[in-house]
Length: 129
Image (tube, rainbow, N blue to C red; front, side, top):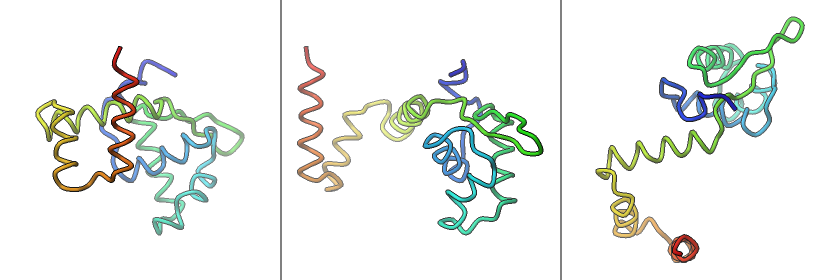
């Protein structure tokens, strides 16, 4: 990965994120291959995917490598780095930087199942020295 792993500079939109997911699952795809992954579920055309790919190239989130008359697109941002950055922004923006406040909110609104709570407890046990 490149130095842009941590942040693509500009925020990635929800639509662009769908394209990124397709590329994270299988790097080095053509626009048509990405469309095969995302177009039907989102009612998009190939032109829409090409526009989104172009925006992601401009943002430094993906690379476009010429391959004959087409391009192969590859992510320059690791999924883990993106998720980490977005998670931190969410916690900062909505919960004043407190991850505990996020978990408390989810628990209070019954958004966490017993299984979720058990997973969180197990994770906390692993993280403690």
